[in-house]
Image 1 (cartoon, each protein chain N blue to C red):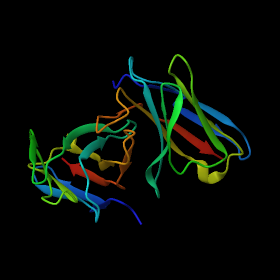
Image 2 (cartoon, each protein chain N blue to C red; image 1 turned 45 degrees about the vertical axis):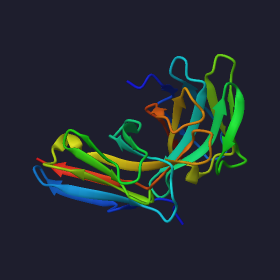
Image 3 (cartoon, each protein chain N blue to C red; image 1 turned 180 degrees about the vertical axis):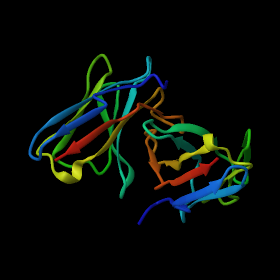
Image 4 (cartoon, helix red, strand yellow; image 1 turned 30 degrees about the horizontal axis):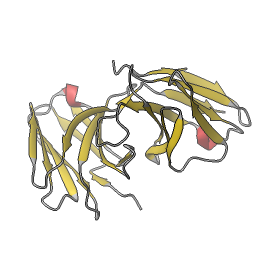
Length: 114
Length: 111
């Protein structure tokens, strides 16, 4: 158990819909990272938050957004969903944004867009 | 073009065999990490290497960082079914703590 909690574990929805994925980091970790894992693209970095502020941005689509709340949990919002958005979405946390520390990953949220 | 190229992409072997997987790049890195991901789970850190030429051992797993800090290898001795999983190498990008991952090597060890 990494200490990172993600909900929901599985989600099935239709094209055009909007979903919200939730992540609770390990106790005391201030940094939260979101990654997308698909068969053809591997594990791709989306976005990072540190103590409520956006810290780094990857190839995150404009249809996707995220935020980190004062209690440090984070949400990833995916809108106008397309078939190609079907993937595993991982949240990870770390105590130190400077690295090269370990990232602690949750079990992921599997999104299926039909 | 991937920053990190992992090979082979897929490996299926019998229990007891030895194997080596590779993580290559044309870039120089300050450090490199190896993670293992089992089905239905998130990646879990195995090791971090930081010095060129460094060798680290974790039971039957031996990790090496290239002298020029551009590549790394993972050698498993006498593989067991419990070693089955996706092996990912990762490097830091920038100074924010985020990691960039390779595509991974899927290892299947048959009993």
